[in-house]
Image (cartoon, rainbow, N blue to C red; front, side, top):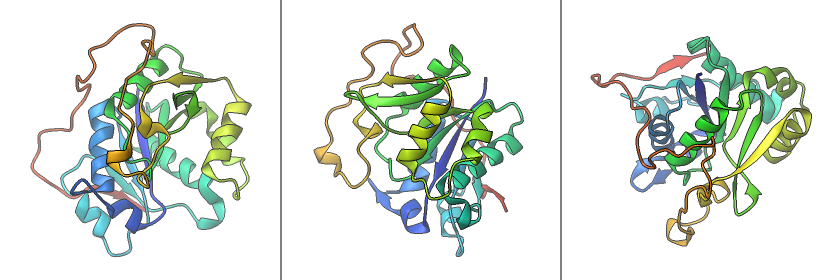
Length: 224
């Protein structure tokens, strides 16, 4: 089982926004790795190379966006395509808007664990009953994603995918699922963790499922 993290930023400014002293995109990549996602893909315009610089030394694929006329669904499909090109065995992807920067790595772990027991189902994390991000999209749903209208925004895309195939919402107790970076950190509710094991068994919260390779820093791989 291989679940990628596909982080999507609409602009370099969104990717490079300072979050607790770290560029947002670098922090998200580290969270994805800590939660057990692999490969990790970032799709963002980077005309001056500033995002690549921020990601230097990280095990990440940095890709150029799809044509703008394909809309948000096209950007999501582009990111999943990059993940599959990197690891052919990728069978699902966490679609993760970069504005959702407060997410906890344990939420990533929980979604991956739940996918392991339910591989054909779209998984949506929730906080206090409200679904949010990232959504876990099985690769088999790519044709559905590509067929969505280019004017659909991410919330409508999530609803359309959930209505087109088996889907499940999982309560995970993480306010970062629904509250993005526009909410100051000191206004975030406490992280509670899921009330029940997402995959039907308990794991040790806080344990890192995967970490990046112990290598000398190098620029991220890029894909045109």
